[in-house]
Image 1: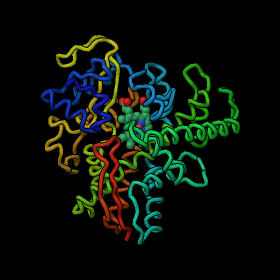
Image 2: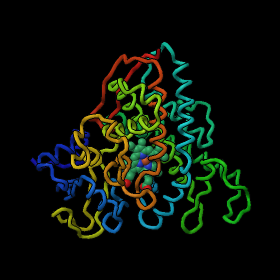
Image 3: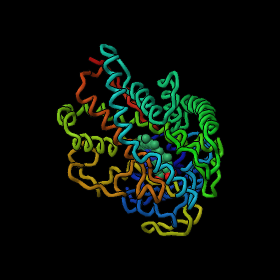
Image 4: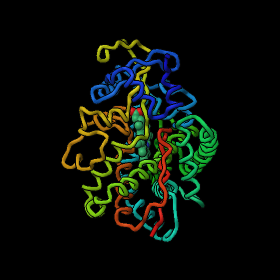
Length: 402
Ligand code: HEM
């Protein structure tokens, strides 16, 4: 039977890529059919290095448009290439420069008070974190809303449509349409409060939402309102989506309870624990690119226009980089330098030169704060379950806060 990877991803979720590679004998470069066309699935640090070479791979059009419009929005940085990408990416990197410190403090504060308020109650860890991270990122961005928890849940719903099947796909689209309208209103409001001339001598933007409203393209023109709104959501939405990993982190604290005292007290232990959570638990199943030119990938020829799919979880579990890759071992990160191509839950390479996530330091800071608070708090697990292998995998972790 001929398998098509797109159909397998819908049907088998995170199992689709490892099963496909296993059937072919686990090569680092594996020919597949994708949406009826020839494509390659590539895995491991050497493949990551090539995947992030812009002379080999472009991104425009690589993610099927309906999925790209749902997850990132039309006109988003994710689908740009060349100078336009570098220019937009630089704006994201400047914006997020100090966000890790601020978000870490905000997560500590909001999570600490949420756990105090819910003492004696049974709560879903995912919902609690989506709400807390939502509050934190809205406060950082300078957006004040009456019900930040509700905004957090709606932003999380967009991400839940990733697997593009079942009722969460429709819910995700409803949330996306609401979010686009809401964010356009925020951009218009920020612009009406500030003059729009590039040479204006007004004071610089004081909040992230004002900064994005003032972003310009390489020609010096303001981004259109819909695109600025999409990019604002491209900061807010993934910050809430950190709740997927945050839930895995809390669950890992339950599994590795002997490590709780060390991670509660020691920032470097927390960092190692966070890195291991990011390495081991799946979120992004794959990244898609399109070959620019004929190239040889470990003996497999790719023609221009063919899709190349980077196996993200497979790279994070590559036995060439990680010993006992399926075992949780935070110690593997203690005193270890991690190069830019071997640990890729948020993409690989240099974020300033390619598409690697600009929110990685903020993600690490938010998960570390979560681990710090939960390691020191009193709670017990009431129920555990998982939607794995559905994409995105969400842990049904319910705890009693004590
Ligand atoms: C504060 C949190 C986050 C922010 C603000 C953020 C923002 C972004 C943005 C703007 C991009 C597009 C970059 C580009 O195309 O050049 C991006 C890419 C990406 N992000 Fe994040 N993100 C965050 C958290 C996460 C999390 C939790 C994950 C998953 C573990 C993640 C995984 C990725 C991946 C895989 C890419 C694409 C890399 C590529 O295409 O090469 N991000 N992120």
